[in-house]
Length: 170
Image 1: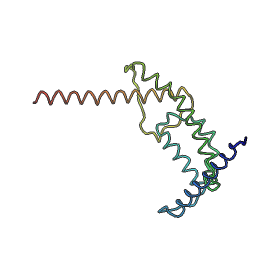
Image 2: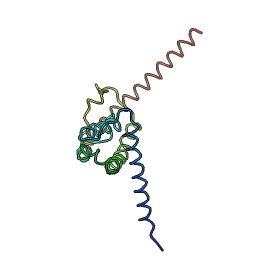
Image 3: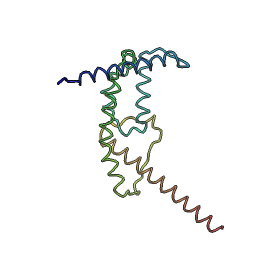
Image 4: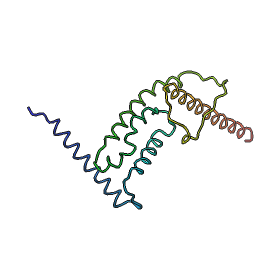
């Protein structure tokens, strides 16, 4: 019997290289305003990537960005070397954080809220920092879900009031 797992790994690596090279060619030749891959572009890409992936800052912790921070100036080298190491590490961390979030949001969706506290939520997500603790992340989930429940309630109430008003005028 022959072990083909090594062959599959080689094929996957070759496919990855072809895809990365194709993407690079498109970026360099087909982009309307190509820019050289530099450390400053890497830093912007790193920051924008996490802002886009977790714009409400409810999944990643600040420690995750610190651990991945060495890639901040290396994304250009990653691309030039056809490496997906940064991407793979981010995906692994993100999947872990998604799994950790499931019981958090399940808890908040399965228990009644109290609306007696003077809560607030900041929608300027760019100004928010990534949570430094799990408790801080948990609180962010609570605030977001509470807001969404209130917003949905308000929308339903307004629609119901409008329906009653329309029925009365009919």
